Amino acid sequence: MSIPISRPTSFAPTRRLAGWRMDAARLAAELLRSVSPKAADEVLDLRSALLEPGVTPAMLLRVFLAAKNRLEKEHYLLFFRLRRVLEPNLGLRLGREAASRILPVDFQYRSLPQMLRRARQNLFEHDLALTSPDAAAVTVVWSLAAVTEE
Amino acid sequence: MNTSTTQPAVTNPVVGALSTLLGDSYSLMGETHLAHWNVEGSAFFELHGAFQKQYEELFEAVDDIAERIRAIDAYAPGGLKALAKLSTVPPVPTGAAPAKDFVAALIEGHETTTESAKKVRDTAAETGDLETQDLAIGRVRVHQKTLWMLRSYLKNL
Ligand SMILES: [Fe+2]
Image: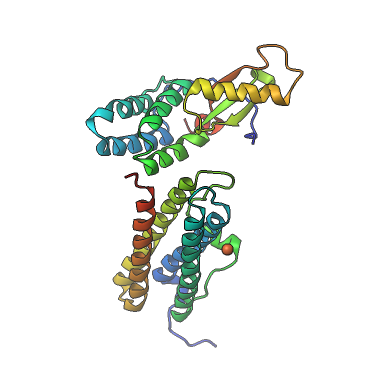
């Protein structure tokens, strides 16, 4: 499924944090209260990433997946809520600039390289004429929803 | 000429709160029905059956809530569009998804509907409408019990 926007977004948030980030940070704080001290590092990393104005979408996705891989089994509901908050605000941009498309992030992948590889593979499967590496570039971006709110 | 001095029922805050509860309950019934159809995986039979019991219970509940609105002399809102506008129940997944995602989404729906039922309970208490309060307390109890069951399903022991 393709999100109906084609404008690439390389937005770096600078002002006050968007509401969705605060919502996610609150969920991370709730998670922190219920995890064992051993698992606290991943959650603290996630919380800091959410509250860091200069975080890139790829960095945020990476720390989220690390926390999810370690803790989702024990805390399924909180990770479900976090996914619901992150889903509309992150996207995968296929291709470069004008010709790009943005797809939703699929959280079933355990790592970012795995997710990007799969997206690239899909791109080649559906467009056999793709030749330039630029056309097959896959980047994690803030979705239009995230940018509008900031 | 209409000489009635009765306040129009629409200004009764209990009617507003009941209408929201009706919208949320109806929407939750629809989402639970969808979960009953689309859930997949090794827990299929268990969840398919549990969701059916839940939407059947909600079907009776929406009738009770709507008829309570009529009993206090207002008209019940109805029709999918009008009820959807009244509701803030979040949707369950619409395609292939882990069974646990259906359970988690329904937990959020029951949480929303519990809050609406509590609003009815408290508004009815403020206006001394004990019968509506009784209905709302019953709804809060049902949703809390369902939440306990759905949350237990997600526990990883
Ligand atoms: Fe059925």
